[in-house]
Every structure is written in C-alpha cells, then in structure tokens.
Image (cartoon, rainbow, N blue to C red; front, top):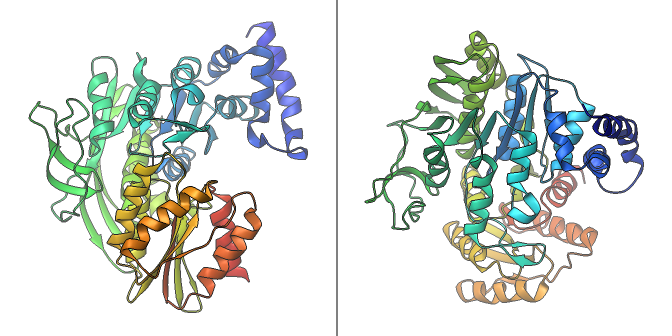
Length: 472
C-alpha cells in the first residue's frame, strides 16, 4: 500500500471503534475517516487485501435477506468480510479495514447515480461478482429531487457495466435484471437463476414493458409481480437458467424445494452441477427468490465446491424466521389477533407483504396504510392496487413520509373507494408519537386481521411497533 493509504487505514482502524460513543455514522465511521484522508480512490488499494475478491449484492427487494443467507453459506467455507443495508462506499471501506477474510460480501442499495455512485463503487471495489435480486419502482424522490425510474435502472446497471472479469449472478425471471446479464455476456460469465416448475401456477402478476425495446412483454406465466416467463417481438426473452427451482411441496409447517444447478464457479474456474432437496419454513413465496439468489451466488463463489450440497442443506434445513432482518414484514399473533407489519416502499414489496399476510387471513381485514411522499404518485398507484387486492373491510391512512398534505391527498383518493376510511395526520418529526399511535391502532383494532405497510423508516419504526405489540 502507499504511505498515504497505510496511514489512513491505521487512523481509521484506531478511530473506528469510538464511533459507538457519538451520534450517526455508526458502522461506516472507519470508512468515513479513511476516505477523508486517503480519498475514495484509496479504497481500491484496500480491496486488494482480499485473496478471492468482493461480491456486491443489489436490487430493489430482497437485498438484505439474500445477503444474510449468502453470508451464512459462505462463512462455512471461508472467512469473509461483510456489510449490510449500505448505501455508501464508506460501509464497504469499514469492512475492509475492521474485518478479516479472503472474500467480501457487501449489500449495496442504489437509488440514484449521484448519491449511489455505482460506477465509482465498481471501479474502486473492483468486484469479482455482482448479484441482482429484482428491479422495480422504488423511491422516486431522492434528497428532495424526483428520480425517474430510467435513471434508477441505469444506476443499478452501472454497478456491473464496466466489469471485465468475474461473474454476474442475476434473476432471469425479472426482465430488467435478465437484460443486464444478457448485455454483459460478451465480457463476463453470467449465472442466471429462476423458477422452472410445473407445480407453480400462474400468480396473475404484472405485465411490463420490454426493457430492450419498450413494447409490452408477452408472459406465458407469472411467478411474482413482473417476474415470470416472458418474451418480446424484438427477440428478447427469458435466458436459460443455471440455477432453478424445479419442484415445490407446500406444507403448513414446512416447504420442500428441489434445486437444480449447472453453473460456473469463479474461484476454481470450473463448471459445477448439483441437484438436491431442501426443507425451509413456510416463509413466503418471495423468499424462494432470495433462496435461489443466495444459493446461486454461493455456488458461484465458494472455494469448496464439494461442500455445496451439504452446506446448503445444513443452512436451510435448520433455518428459522430469525433470519429475516429486523423491521422487515412479519406477522405477529397478539392474543389471537394477527397483525402483519413491515416496510413496503414500492409496489413489489407491498404485493409481497400482502401475499405473505394472505396466508393468515380468514376473515374481515383492516388495512393501515402508510403513504409515500410528494412526487411519488406512481408508488401510490401501485400501493392502491395492493390495498384493493386485499379487499379490506376498513382502511386507515397515515403519512409514511414527511408531507402530511400529500398524504391527505392520497387519502382523499382512497376515500372514494372506501368512504369510511380514516386519516390520522401523524407527524414524521414526532416519531415516538407516530409509533405509539400506530401500535394503538393495531392493538385496539376491532378486526382479527390487520396489515400495516407502506412507506416509513426502513427498519426502526416497524421494529419498534412490532416489539411494542409483542412486549406491552
């Protein structure tokens, strides 16, 4: 390392642990110190410390869960450095500085090019792998500025666009992530994952425009929202799968999944094949994709390919719901009342939450909806479709972001469909009051089934409400 980088790393390593005594920054503090001294380009020298290299995971939904599962899998075979729920290069730099390991696994959320700097991240981290979960409409406003979906999609693409080595692991069932892989096949290896099972019926998802030509795609089957089997008149279609779900048995207490794989392992530079059955908790259909993504990424980057079947079975056959990150959608039973709550910042996430909740609903339902912000009308439209799909007996609307006036506008639109809907103008700046009221609304609901989802603080608010419902 250069002297400048070595000094910056030493200062960051010594100063990083003290971040817990001050406000903000948290796990990223060591990285902030480092980049202040050595600059962002200094991260490239840190990245060379890893004997195998770094893998970055991104997408709209499933990033944290997939990263969590991948860390569980890879940790059985090698020592890794990791970071979760990160939108900054500083978190990755902190992991480089404060942890040991030959392989890095980093979640990286990207909402736009300016703040996400995906091209810079790709250049200085120099990943051997990028893993894509799914891409759909998310926050259309970043730092007070509307961020068109085209720019959001471009930012995701930039994370792997300049790769000249390694492997992209991507969801073939999502046309947007599939195109990212197809466009990079000439530069790097692509391992595609998806579903290829006759046992899964069409789930009445969403038709979207072809990401290549803009015409409406033709779907022969929908698996989840816009994920499925599709093709376009321009010739674009779902690519051949390297890792796939070939069979599924759904039980009340467990699900059996049959996974088939034939892919390229980067670490050993050879193809590997596998076929096995795993047993998982009934964790929702969306987690099938997180499972496939993590297995595909694990099989791609593990240095011990002989362990693939035993490791995957060991992790998944003993899995419990604690692997769900804090604040994500969960259903809790409070005295015979089932309350489902968690983040649903975009239409896909909200649909997934609704699908998960529907496993428990056996009677009239109340929907407590937390709204998006100004300039996020597209997200509201997607959310409203989800609300209507649940056929709620009663609706409550609460601002999920800062603008109470915009939340009221959304409420007035919903009131035309649900005349007895209620509106609570809770302030985003008084989070304790908001949490107390939302907890009270769920606990005191006259309905046995309550779903609370939409926008809000991505972890803290939902986790605190859940804890209050369980503990109080």
